[in-house]
Amino acid sequence: MAFDSEALAQARKRAAAGGAERYHAANAAKGKLFARERIALLVDDGSFVEDGLFANSLAEGLPADGVITGNARIDGRDVCIMANDSTVKAGSWGARTVEKIIRIIERAYANGAPMVYLVDSAGARITDQVDLFPGPRGAGKIFHTQVRASGSIPQVCALFGPSAAGGAYIPAFCDVVAMVEGNASMYLGSDRMVEMVTGEKTTLEAMGGARVHCAESGVGHFLCKTERDALDVVRSYLSYLPSNYAQQPPAAVAAEPAKVDLAALVPVSERQAFDMRRYVKGIVDEGSFFEIHALWARELTVGFARLNGEVVGVVGNNSMFKGGVLFVDSADKASRFVQLCDAFNVPLIFLSDVPGFMVGSAVEKQGIIRHGAKMISAISEATVPKICVVVRKAYGAGLYAMAGPGFDPEATIALPTAKIAVMGAEAAVNAVYANKIAALPEDEREAFVAERRAEYERDIDIMRLASELVIDTIVEPADLRGELIARFAAARGKDRSFSRRRHGVTPA
Image (tube, rainbow, N blue to C red; front, side, top):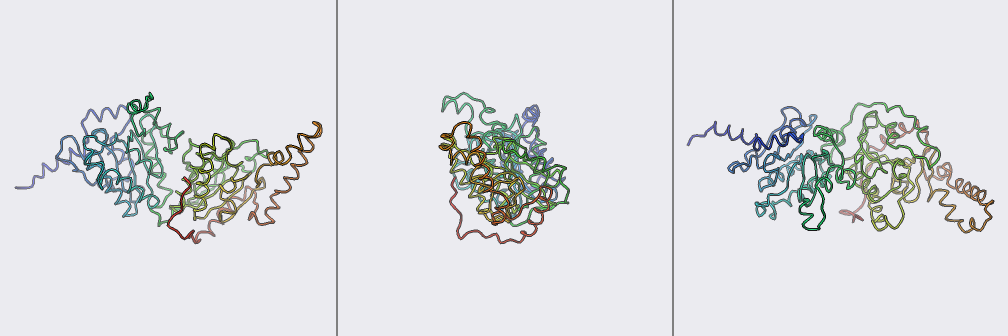
């Protein structure tokens, strides 16, 4: 029987077209692009090479089995891509869908290339559960493969629609997730299932919408207005990272920082807040700060930037939110970002203005000790060059959480405004002299407290700490950028061994 080239061409055309026109129209009405348009907008022109186009081609109405996979280039660098096609059974998974996803992640891992997930899926097809769910190459293998690849290659997700049930774990296992507001959602059970199981009446948006996950749960990292914005996030994120753990982050042309008067920005009074994000922009190359998790746990700011063209990670306390105190969520936020930087050879700058960890019954019940220990573990285990800069204060275990002297930083640098102590002067005087103060006549208390505070301030004087080698140097704000550049350059060839073991036991 002769090979029918025309039939092949028609089959290729049908597979590439996706689902019925009415599903394309319904998506367009929601501001959603076709999965193949998303890929075309993301990757370099003409670079996408597809695999598995004819998956399940003998079945009716399942072109490519609802998922597009293949290789491409982004800014000239090889990547692997998976994109759910929501015009095909709402992007749901069948057995071949799952196999295609597993194969492309395996290829990304084997080739040392970043893995990009463009997610828009209603989850598993219940009618196909025996074929896709329980077996050794079933849906669970997707997550196993993602975990195996984690820290070896960058994994980034743009979420355009639902990511339902077990499928919600694909974004969760990625380094970062960009979510399109109004369309993207993640949830383990639908609103109908939640009502049936728990009696709670809710909506998908209220329970698992983009803003919920980017501002409250922390599962989402970037809240995007449009799909193009989400694709820009993917491209920008990858621009700061190497293709895999064995490579160094890509350098860029150095630029001067934005014009920020760092000395004037930091108030003398600890009670007065300032925005650490502005401080960061006054140190790093102008326009290079790429904040991650901007809406979640805002008392801590994290993100990538460039310092003299080289990629760095920034962790800074932000007193504009909750006074910069570390809470359960901010500890988790720091832990994950530090691990991300350490995995991909990104040096870390810690900008400390921290009163310490939050206290009280509410946070103790939430496990503040456990979460704080997780943050300190992540910083201890990070072997990339790291520098602690005490901008204004580092009190209590906050000093430890910000990579202080006991955590093998390349240096602990203090600014003239810096204070390092177990606690602030006011709290210390109250802790030590509470009974004495109460016993004094009212007209003597103020002078007594002022004298004790002055004693305490002398005890923790920054010059004294420098003379005792607790800190390595004191620099003026205008000189901080140059100091960081020089010290990171000197640390470039450091030994990154840490401990004789397979891995630690995370206090999670």
